[in-house]
Image 1 (cartoon, rainbow, N blue to C red):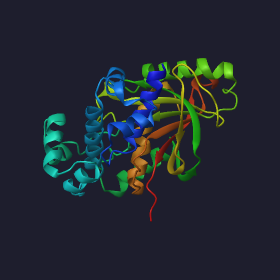
Image 2 (image 1 turned 180 degrees about the vertical axis):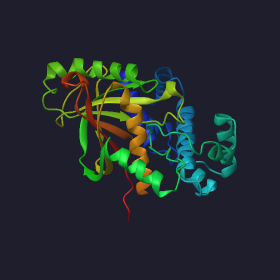
Image 3 (image 1 turned 90 degrees about the horizontal axis):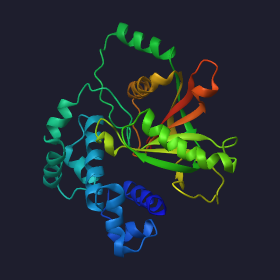
Image 4 (image 1 turned 90 degrees about the vertical axis):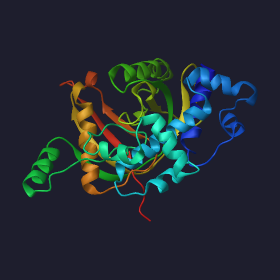
Amino acid sequence: MDYRKRVCQAMNFISQNLNRDLSLEEVAQAASFSMFHFHRIFKVVVGENIAEFTRRLRIEMAANRLLANQIEDITTIAMECGFSSSQNFAKAFRKCFNTTPSKYRKSKIGNKIGKGENAFSLQVMYDSTTEFMNLINYERKNTMNAEIREMPEYHVAYVRKTGPYGKETCEQAFDELMQWAGPMGYLASGVMLGVYWDNPDVTPPEKCRVDACISVPYGTATKGPVDIQTIKGGLYAVCHFEIQDDGFQQAWEDAFEWLVNGGYECDEIPCYELYHKSAADHPEGKWIFDICIPLKSKS
């Protein structure tokens, strides 16, 4: 369990530094590993070696940006996502997606939006008529409230699971977190969050990462599969929902439709769900929660 917790720290460190080349020593130090066996340990836990994991995240980040902005230069995307040249990027991209970056971008126009590591899969085709937009706005007002808000930083205990986003993967993560948090007395005072690192429109479902989180005081000690991390504060699009169990996917699609219509640009950090009440605690079996999408600050 200690290995898995520390490998999660290494994964986080890599995710936060995709725009530069990291040495094995840097990644090992970030997770408090010695270099001697770290490479083998990482592969056992993650299923990919460090280079494979880093390359995949870079390609997926680039794919998300291709979908987010139809006019952004592909070479610029390649360089800003950590590739040494557009040729190296094109070769790696074709190997992963079996197509060129430009063809991938064109083929994905109009796809529905899912949850994302960077929340970048935003390209949706809209009818520009006033009647249609009025209908969209009418339906949205009756299903959610949304605003741009400065969100606090959250210091959280978390359990990470890898697998398709959905009830089974999320429940496993939260069940393990609750087994630890309940006896510690944090359920009454802690804020519950679900952090989604990857975009299932881009990342293979079996490789998607989700963190079940609860806010805890600084200095909290953890054990077993539970570790500590900080959820970055700042400017977020906060979309409020009250839904049944089967409404989560539609909620995410509605949140991103609102985001796209507003012309906001997502930051390259994970989205999260902020839970106010679970279905088990609601008289009508509803989930009351916010989808929080990080935004780039406008300079």
